[in-house]
Length: 225
Image 1: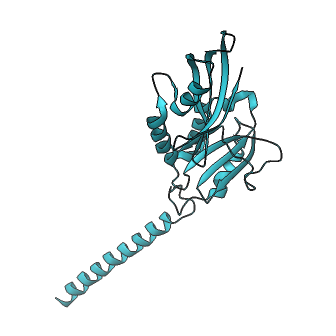
Image 2: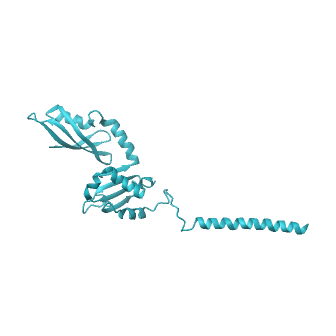
Image 3: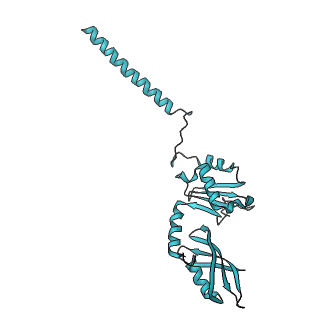
């Protein structure tokens, strides 16, 4: 009887010993540096490595890449090669699809700027991005358009009010294009074109640029033919 009990105890001890060995092996394998796992989270992203990857992007001539910790913005200065950065959707989608910038919780927004010699992100020389995408700003844009964009006349009401008061013949006003071209510190840059009669009664096409803030205040209006 003692022999049987001894054998049972040996078997039980061996079983638990085997479990311990297996557990240690799993832990070592899981923590191995060769394990190809990628975590996306606030504590697992090395922004320096992401900056280095973006700097090597082949489809654009990258001049400067900067991650601003203060507002979690990812800023990229590129040359206007073949006018490709004017293709807004392609520009943003390229960087997001290639480097998954839009899935990284550390990055609030991705901003593309046209490179200007002598300017630097570190000294805050760049002011208005050519293209931008931001989760926070998406809500700001939605609210801005809801409050100030007139889908029937296809323009922004603060600008329309301004032109109605300044044109020679407001009744002849017809908008052709109207777009947001940038956003900085609560102010949108607006650019567009319209037809209207001049002082001689001739219908002419005009280009217009202005700034409109999130409260609807308009400034820096410039109209040119």
